[in-house]
Image 1 (tube, helix red, strand yellow):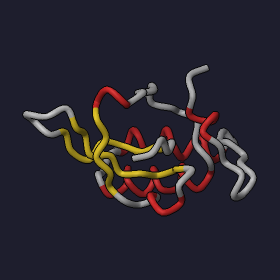
Image 2: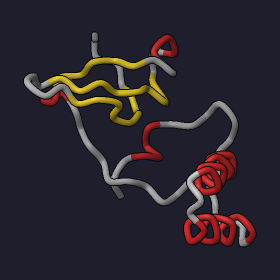
Image 3: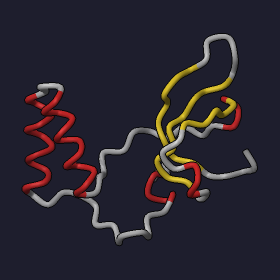
Length: 102
């Protein structure tokens, strides 16, 4: 709305308009977190999907793999957790740089 940074995922793409509805996961405006916001396509910067996750995020993805009965994905994620292949993020100090292209 007034220049907030948001990180999230697309909930809905409006067919005849340039707006996209985005579920906000992280923002510098704490009031937006968890909400769906409309963003003009021209204002978006889309980054490639990351494969680097925190342990909590990996646990959530494992739950999703179980609920979708995706055995291959479950095995891959479980293996990474067992090997300790996840991000160590200091609580409440996560930044947008984690999601930027490298």
